[in-house]
Length: 156
Length: 283
Image (cartoon, rainbow over all chains, first blue to last red; front, side):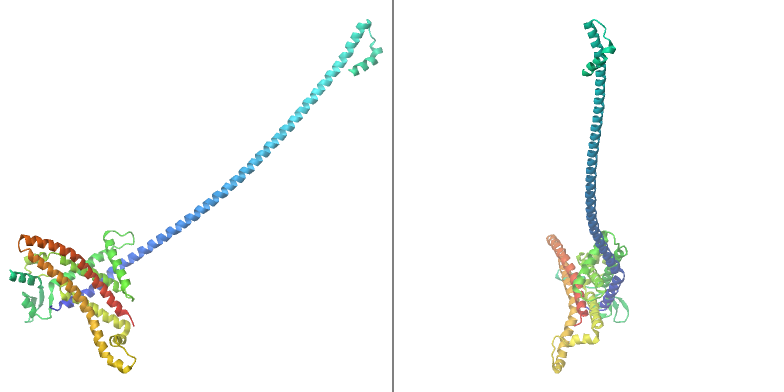
């Protein structure tokens, strides 16, 4: 084993290399790696956060949907009620109108009847007189028998 | 044959040396004997050169990745670099309990650099030396971690850091106390004083064992591995059947060695982190 000045050369070279590595090689590499792992950690955290946010948003959406459904149901119910009410009102109106029309028609019918009766009464009087004339063979004095005829007509 | 073999092995284990000749002039050694005459002031140009080159390669690749590092989705090479950075960062967090921004980058440097140095072991032993031979360079050891100077050079830097941080964190008194008052202690002041040399001896051995075992472990593993590759390479010159058998062995050993080189790089890094962690702990 031959120990000589090579040992000094190697010692110095070693020290110089370590120094260079310490100054120029190690820091950029380790910093880049640390920064990257921080970035990744942040990314993961952001992903978690986003997931939570998504969950919240979903819940909120479901809530909103439920509310909307409830409102819609309420509106529909209200509308149905209103429609029923309208139908009922319309029915009532129609019924009233019908009744009114029926009453008017009945009144008219009655009027017609009375008028016909009046006409008939008049004609009965004339026919009676004509009949009586035929029977008696003489003219009936209308003036003399007016009271009797009136009585007859009213009995019809 | 035997002489050839031993010559071949010796040749493969000889460094390309640049140093001060006994006459005071500087130059390349032309033989092992000439290199031995140079004493301490010489450099293994091959292993040191490959080591520095691989270190620069590591820094260039990782520096490139660092410059283009984005916090967006990482792609291709950045992914690869980040896997390593994350791996080293995790190891540092698990094994280092103090606060020191230098430990993790040092761990990364050690792991990648030692791995690259060990990786040279997988290149067939003759390729690069033969290439250099064409240019008139006769000795070329390309695996820096098979050179004890390289591994001990690194572990002594670690040793220096252990002492530096021990003193910085605990103060000179604290560090001296750690060296002299453990593992044996007593409530009696006289016995305590008496135990100081014993403790100092034990703790000094303990302290020195760290860098030496750290450097020699890597060296030993890689040297042994390299040696086996050289021995296998010897078979390529010993007939067709031996050469084929050697090819199979080479493949098998190389595959097994992938595990060894990674494990040794990892061990060097983890032990450095653990030693420095101990240096930062105040009792």
